[in-house]
Length: 199
Image (cartoon, rainbow, N blue to C red; front, side):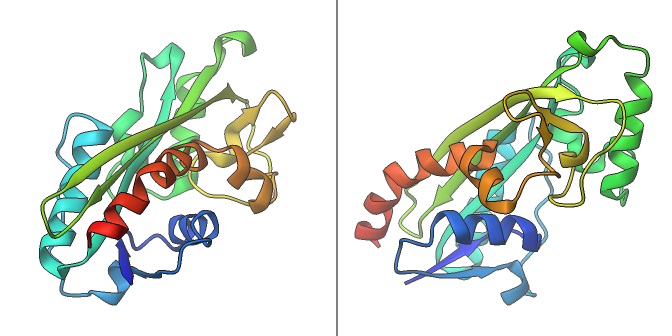
């Protein structure tokens, strides 16, 4: 069976594949469907954006589709960058520019007031019209300087207090055990069989 993961981000696709490898499915991405219509992420929440992506791509491909919207919410910024995490420093900004803008904004904020959480909402949509969303999050702290070469997004500045490592310093295996996306996927695993059996 084929499932479309509604992303061109190969890092996200690899994480999803690693975490769902127990299922006998072939994972495709938007790279396999270059004629897919662009999805404007104009929702007011992670859930709205994820569901819109899943519904749009499912309708276009006729295949069961999983989509995510995720981002970083920083306590002292009132939850920003939130749904704007991927374009925080402007349209087309890369990961480095985004986290550099974040670090500049909270420069001078005491370490104990730099609490933050990564949030991930996964949406799944079937050609039958059946759809669901699940969510996972992970709390940590924003450090003053980036550390680590792994991961992507805000991983170099997001510190896990338990291990003392940033997400970018962790191995993929360790990050995949504990991250917000891993937690959302654990919730997805609970409902995925009913979607597979209904397809």
